[in-house]
Length: 305
Ligand code: GLN
Image 1: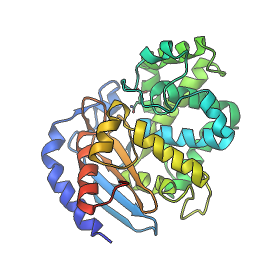
Image 2 (image 1 turned 180 degrees about the vertical axis):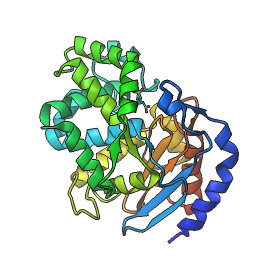
Image 3 (image 1 turned 180 degrees about the horizontal axis):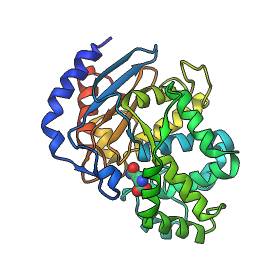
Image 4 (image 1 turned 90 degrees about the horizontal axis):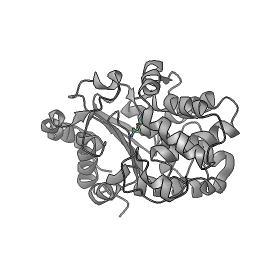
């Protein structure tokens, strides 16, 4: 087994110069206030060993990373019928873009751009009793963190500044691809974005995707092996927005990022790894986080290729 602890500590030192280069998301004050020099990283292996460095236990706003969990809930509920409502192709456009929706009759390109996540949120709302509790419970169980919570302040600000997401939801609704009230869909989406997790939570919380859909500690079957495989494939092709090709090239594993600066990767049958640094690159992915994951797969020699 690679010496994960030494590797993580090395990476933490190596990315220091990058920590002042990224731009912290500033569309809401709560995110803009997070210090840019933060960096954390955690690895959890299939047999439950945890390795961490830096600010790995500090919570941050997961934002788009939550889209993996809502997709999980939607697949649990309606399985492959989901793909009648959302596509599976990389978008090549910014995560909050509207342009392809018109050309593709309100069918979002994939579940990880905002348009797709809104449709997935709609499915979860339609098929789950108390979807917020269901989502929170799933994430808590997967992360083995019973006090994991949301940040209502973030959700409120997302709503106050959510003009583009509101535009997306209305536009999708005009094509008949949303069933629930637009405000309900948006509120649920803002709630999921506001969940607070640390690198340790994320590495633990994504391990089910490295473990054929089964959570190693709770024993829960979260997804079938087939569904876990497909979510990993979607993370590889669409998980880092219009930088997914670059991420696959440099890092070589399925990954999912959020504008809070978190980024989590899965190495099937082996481990999950999460990095956090709030400074983002032009595509909205953590600058130091992406670099850290690239260094991790290079130093360990682990990737899916
Ligand atoms: N709350 C953000 C938005 O909807 C989440 C996007 C992200 O993390 N990329 O714009």
